[in-house]
Length: 377
Image 1 (cartoon, rainbow, N blue to C red):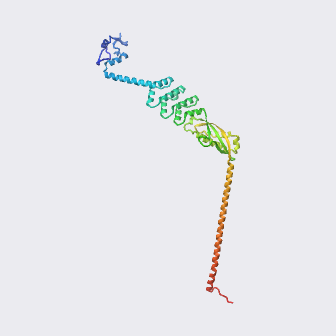
Image 2: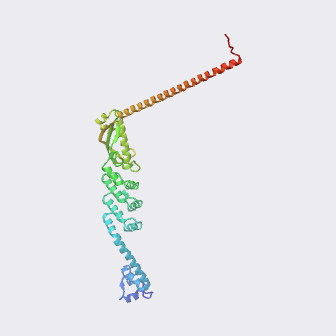
C-alpha cells in the first residue's frame, strides 16, 4: 500500500485507502509512471505527483484551530499589503511600464522609504525615455542616479529638460555634466537655452550699476559716452568654474575705454564706431569665462565735455594760485627783512647814545687822574 502525506482531524496520519473511502473511492493522480495510475486523495503521491488544489485542504484538515487562525491572519495581512501596494503604486508603475521606463514596483516602494517623491522621479524617467535620449547604458539616466541627484539637492526635472534641449540642438551634454552644473548652483537649463539662443548683455548694465553709459576720453581731451551691447552664448565646457556675466561686462568696458583712449581725436571714433568692436574682439575677452562672445555692437555714442580744455583751465588756475602764493611768500619775506633792518637801526642808535653817555665820564676820570692839563692863558 502506498501512503500519501496527509493528516486528518485529530492529527493522525492516514493512508490513501482511508482518504479514498472518505471521498468516495480512489482517484487517479496525474502521475503516468505507474501502470494504471496510483490511488491517491489528490494531495501528494509517493511517486512525486503534486495536486495543489488538494494540498491546502489536506493540511487544514489536520491542523488545530489556533494554527488555522494564525495562517488566516497572515493571509489577510498579505492581502491587505497587496491591496495597499496596488492602490498606491500600481497606477504610476503602469504608467512607467506603458511608457517604456525601466522602473520596478519595488523601486517605487523603496522611494517611499528613502523619502524620494516617486511622482517626480517617474515623470522625469518617462520624459527622458520618450524624448529618445537613449538607453540607460548610453545615457546613464538610471532610477538610482535620479534619486541620488534629488537627495543631493539637485533639480531633477531641470536636468532632464536641459538634456532634452541639448539633444534636440545636437549639443554634447551628458547626465554627469548636467548634474554637476546643477549642483554647482548654475541654471543648467538656462545655460543650454543660451547656447541655442544667444543672450544680449548691456554694457554697462543699468540694473547692476547706476551708470547707463561708459565714459571714455580720446587723446584730444574730448569725452565720449558709449553704450554697447554684447551678444554671448554659453560655453558648457567652461561653465563650471568660469567667470560670470559681471566679468564679461567689466572686460568689455575696459576694452572700449582703451580703444577710445588710443584714438587721436574723437572724430575718428565718431566716424568709425566699428573700430571699437574690432579692437575689443581681438583682445579675447571671453577667456576663462562661462560665455563665448559672439559680437560687440555700439548701440549709442554721444560727445560729452571737453575734458582736455577743462583740465588746461584748471591747470592754469592752479599755476596762477601757485604764483600768487610764491609772490605772497616773497612779500612776506621782504617785510620780515625790513623789520629786521629797522630793528638793527634802532639797536645801532642805542649803541651810539650809550657811547655818547660814556664820554663825560671818561673826561671826568681823566681830569681826576691828571691826564688832562688845564692851560691858563
